[in-house]
Image: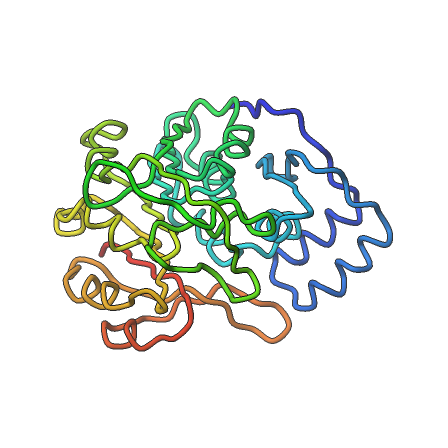
Length: 297
């Protein structure tokens, strides 16, 4: 499996700082400040990390900047080797610019598959660049929902944070300082069940990841029997209480073949991924956005 796009190398000081941050050492803002003094931040483009994973580098965008610095979704990135192995299949709904999907593609190898689902025109441009040359990645340019058709996407054109696009009517994703009054775009909407039938017919899904800024229950409604059938080995689902958390409690209660965990970090000096068992009532009572892990027993 090759990585097609021309890539930019990280300066040595940045490689060291990124490794420390990705490993969970606290104080990332301080040692990254030193790293930027020692070496100039490279221009925007595709960066290939030391393990061969390509990422989008864009200093003007929060998502890409945090990915470059090694702090973006690091608790989930650390989990991927436990959840994926050679030959597995992953479905990445809300693939953004491929931060998780590109890493997953390397873990599942040539015989594995990654289906990256993304509706945002802004994210799609860079997602294509990241997975260019990866024969085991398929991009689905659509949103997923309860039925086929179209849906309005807002927040996708936020110049400072490309990861805040949402199909939830009237919802402003992220913290208030990142809210953006942009232009809505109408995008195709497919059903998760149809995507699985087309791209992974009869195949177990080792990992389903859904991060769509509050539209998660609509995505799952497009494959209502998924967890009853046990076809998914593990799922990582973002929960946004500002929109609705009740679906998460209902899912945990109904998915009796799965153990449920809240994904977090703990540690005073080095932050490590922490999995906290979560019951339906606890899932509903959480006030901040969080990630739910379901693992089949």
